[in-house]
Amino acid sequence: MDCLGALGKIDVSLPCISWSRMNDDGIPAACEADTGAIAAHIMVQYLFDRPGFQQDPVADTSDDTLIGAHCSCPTRLNGFGNPPEPFEQVHHHGDRDAVPRTIWKTGQRVTLLDFLPAHEIKAERSKLLISTGTVVENLNVPPSGGCVVSVKYKMDNQQDVLSYPGFHQLFFYGDYKSELKEFAQLCNFGAKVV
Image: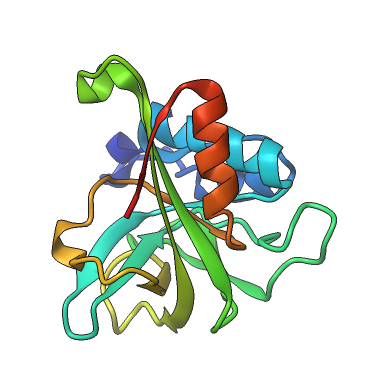
């Protein structure tokens, strides 16, 4: 669903809470009609038995971290068969509709995955962008701007956060860099560890 068109003053409810619940239940659901994000959701759910969090990346140059922000975060970050992380129902940052604000574990190892379909990057084969790191903070919105779930992540590599490639990457619990590289090889995808 292209939900960005529903952000104005119209009577259409945003699907954020539905996307969160669907991903918690193992049904891939992506925001803003992003085909690369839905493909990444499918990969994470079927390979690692857990949902991912599709987010908009924001570089924080004050401490070289990446902030992932969106309003459709699932709660079963430890896996479909495990209890949910703590969460609360809050208003969407547009001050309308209910959305879950999931609290990520500080210190938790995470993987970041972006699937770039070949037709979108004008290449012969699709590509995975992969990185790993650690959750350092859950930002409160407000006073911080952006979507209600804003997770700050420190990457393992000394990546320049301003030039971090991709958009709508998935954050998900666990360190699965090696497995994703092997999966890319199996599927004849390109793979770039950043």
